[in-house]
Length: 427
Image (cartoon, rainbow, N blue to C red; front, side, top):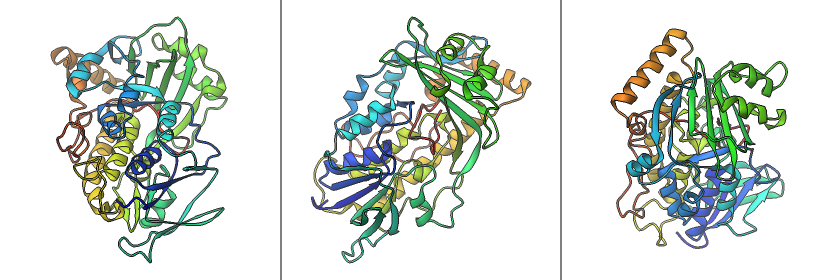
């Protein structure tokens, strides 16, 4: 890629900043346009699995993020009574997939990614509208983006503008967009001194709860429950959590006791059920939720956005060398490898949601929980096998020296721990 290649990134979330950092590393002149007044993220955490951490290795951030890991020892799935349905160990997961699962506050990851960019690369309080996708290879047809300060031209536009992506609607006006996934989510990050517990997720009837310690001593908790789109609590969302989860096992009551009303974030979950025909058009490429919004039940939304970013910036072996071919000319190859993989992950996340959140009947819940407990005893690595084909992904031509498998279909379940804001799917 020529050093003078001009790149505009629309959206300053995880996917946008990761793409900006990777493209800047390749020598591009990158400008990030973020409509919010700052990059300060919504108060939630994010889990990064080994596939995303290996992607971050390419831009020199993987080890910095791994050092923030707080999840050690046992974890797994529980019933509302506290009974363990399935157990996992961090060491076993790291051995199987070549690294840990790292849970950290989203603000920390944003700071690390933004720190890889020049100080003037990010423009906050700057909404952007794509006016022309441009034509690769034609210097007379750059992409054009309109901002309040005027129109900008770019050799490449990276659309990382989230679940309700305006750029996606401009590129593919006939696509139906997102659909409601059938449930809503709540998230909190609170201090909980003196309460020790293993990282876990709890499955009830039409509802789940997750509680996870952060390295800084705070606790990240999320909940999801079957609910119609647009529904809100009749009083406040903390009271709603108490009604739904207040009698579940410890430490859930302790977490709820520490929560203030203003701490609770609630958002409905949506996903792209019909895959896009492509992830690019002209000089414009989609990453993250803009391309493949998925339910958070597989824990891969933010991870797939990071994979997108690195695959886009370094599409061939020899990842850290400069390339002559402009990135805009490689977009068909990006679509070819990313669309099948993210479609498979999205479909798996939908199936996982049917199993954990959307199982509402008493009999069905009992059968599910009994089966999980029995299978976990017979095959202790059951939950870990659910990440085969997901967490073991490697960037093409990455640090291992082996080309990654960017088309494999993963095989089961987990929990996503937060992404960008009110417009995106997060528990």
